[in-house]
Image (tube, rainbow, N blue to C red):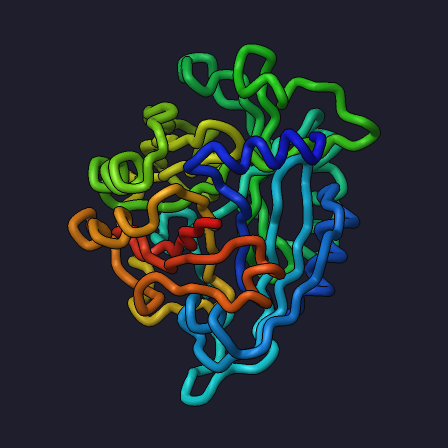
Length: 335
């Protein structure tokens, strides 16, 4: 996409500017994403303790932000180089995590050819370098009208973050997902999926408070969904929330199997299970004033005004860091 189009899109709010997560070794993980998932390396920022660390709830910490691009979307890897005083060390993703646990989150990478995209990943799984979620790429059945023909495969990256490869049939997905791939099966990021416990509550939060629009609502089940999610007798309500352009947010309410665990109350931005959606909006004050009435909670101490140096490096001037009603973090920014 031309730079002018990207700039024009960023003016249409709400708009997801980046998706990202905390990792142990950003350089090593970036090598995996560029070598195996079609990402291109962009800038790498090192931020000394300051406004941004305060914003994300790690005051006094020294941080590294390594940015990758996949298609038109940005993926941001956060590495904590040095923790601020009196902060506990970041924790690894629980080894026994399941798709219905409420800390579950993944990014959906759209591909033009799922066999070509998933094949090398499956070899790494066979070699013990990665862990699978799905037994194999799955084709969703014809009875599921909204999702019929979609092919998908889920797995963990080398540090345990969840990823999904997805190929849309010709009658589904945005037009950009049917363009000709230039030598690579990897096209871009369609959404970030998050587990949630209460669909109406999440709809109010994302659509009424943050200004996204409902982009589909249905229930997936059956043997294909079991094999896709690594669960049994799966019944999951999938509700999409879209921006005017670009990636969206997909809420996954697992009705079955029961027993999905809540996101730990003390999870913070140093933990590897921490994901972050950076959402650009027009009116930070309106969101801040209504956050708690929509079931959200604070990470940052209110709206944070970044220093001129950090604002220039990050590309925005003001922000607030919040949790949705299930505890997933979002960074709400404005220029």
